[in-house]
Image (cartoon, rainbow, N blue to C red; front, side):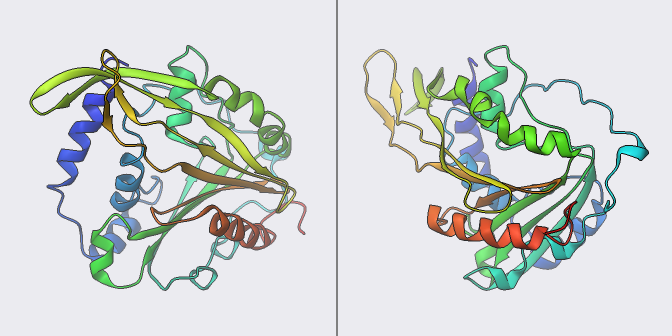
Length: 284
C-alpha cells in the first residue's frame, strides 16, 4: 500500500486531460464490448474523488467453476426489462448503456475488496452465473462531460440460489475487517512528498426494506492527514453509498452518482426489486 495516495494524486491530474467522448461515441463503444463490464469515466471520476487512499485490488481469489447445466434455474437470461428504466429516475436520462457478462464476481465495491485483500484475506465476492450491467446518464450532452453526468449504475446478477442468500447471510462478516481500516502511503503536495493516512469505516446502515433481502452499505472516510504532523492534507470526502438487493436467485448492486442521496438510493432499490421480478426464480 506504499503508493496508494500517490496513485490517486496521479488519477486526479490525469482526469483533467481526458477528452470526454460524445454520446454517439459512447453508444458505439458499448455495442462493441459485449462481454466486458462498462466503466464510464464520469462514474469513475466520482468514485476517485472520494477515495483518496484507494487503489484497485491487486488480485482476487480464483473464480469457482460455473454450476452444471442441470443446476441452472428455469429462467436463465436476464432481460433488459429486469433493470431500472429511465422513467424510474427523478431526472431525465439521455444515455442508457447496457452490457452482459458470464461468471463475474458480485463485487460490492472495489475499495472494500482491496481493504480485505490488503489484510491477506480473500475479497469475499460470490460468483454469478451471468449478469447484466447498465449506466444511466443525465439528459443533455454537455452534462455527460462532467463528473455529475452519471446518475446511477446497476449490476444485476443471477446466482446459484444458495450463493444469493449466502451473500446477505455473510454481509456482516464480509464488512467486519473493514469497520475501521487505516490506509497509509505517500502523497505529493506542493512539490513535496509526505506520508499520510486515511481511515475508512464500512458499515451496514439499512436492512430488509426491499425485495427478499436488502441492505445499504456505507463507507465513511476521514480526512487525509499527515502522519507526522497530524495536519489535514485533504478535507473529509462524502460517504460512499451502495445498495444491494435480492429477489429470488437475482442480486442487484446499485450506486448513485455524485449528487445521489441515501433516500434516493433507498427509493431506487425498491423500484429495482420490483423490476427484478421478471427475471427472478421463483418469480414474485
